Length: 190
Image 1: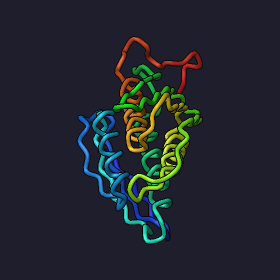
Image 2: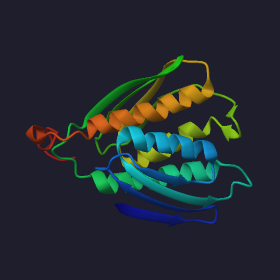
Image 3: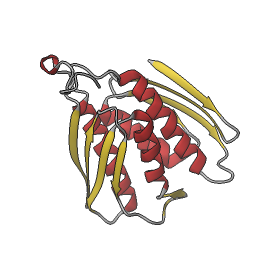
Image 4: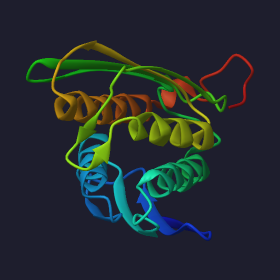
């Protein structure tokens, strides 16, 4: 496992991960719904993940959610690049009851996010617009090109969980070992 910490006036975060793990997690962010999503992300990506966060949640969850995405993304990039002997591209369509979310991604070392999951409201106390903030922070810092698209769904919890699982499964597929591809780029560098 490798680790990274970040301390600001708003948050104090430590993340440890192993991208070649078994999907084991120990998550304590102070944001219960995010803990649930990150636990699911770890399980379905097979990335071992430990996260602790002490944040200014007395104000709201925004700083914690976004800053966790920043630290997790930066650590993921540290563990991943340079990309070699892995598939590089990954896709997943994940169904959770009535909801279906797709994720297509490229471990390109070029960050880009397409986020077409139009949600408003809350899941419990969790503001649903924070999901996009998390993924934007993660993707930009992980330097991956990611498209997350809601195909259908009504239940906000199901939609968000399907999104986290879709990203997780797409990452797992993109990180699949393949010695034949070498450096999976015509530029001979990622």
